[in-house]
Image 1 (cartoon, rainbow, N blue to C red):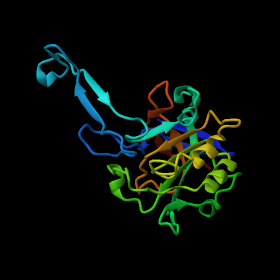
Image 2: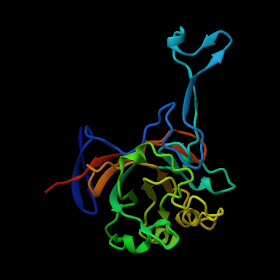
Image 3: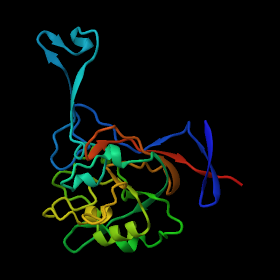
Image 4: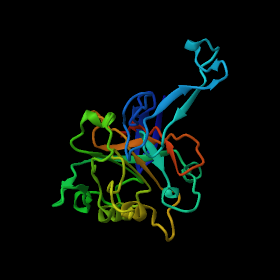
Length: 252
């Protein structure tokens, strides 16, 4: 199936039969991808008396319990409820599911303290008149170990709050990146970049989302794509998610 759409007065075509999945799958028994010391993702058959919810164990169906932490296990999308006392649901906050998006690649800069950080200066090529409302950041080097990495205790790269101010100033409403958090792993609870993104606690941008721990394969080149945001309908601050891209081809 092919569709035609317009973005900033330019017509594009997309082939919906050629999706580019940038989510990370979770597998029971695997050690990642995960962060913040979350328990491993696990799937176990439900047990009640002599019933074991597994066809291999003799049950007529598979009937499993799943344990995971949306923020700590794999690709997830979160809303302002992540940092608010109020119960704000990602299922209510994400109002649309298709966006024109831009993929960019950035090599985080090393600070004097050893931290690797995405800085405002690295984003200056992005202009408000051209950038769409969804931004996808691939950090370099783009190593395959990101697919299963346990980030806990590794002080992974993050976004400087001034860079986040610039991102918000561009009109970005949906930010996706291949890191476990937009903030430093240990920051004494300041969460400066999170707060800047959602304009917390002032006039909060409740319709805006952050998606973390994606993986953008090298064959997906920098540029614009149609983004389909797929989430599980959890009434909580975060949910496992499956963002999918489609190449946008200019039409004459």
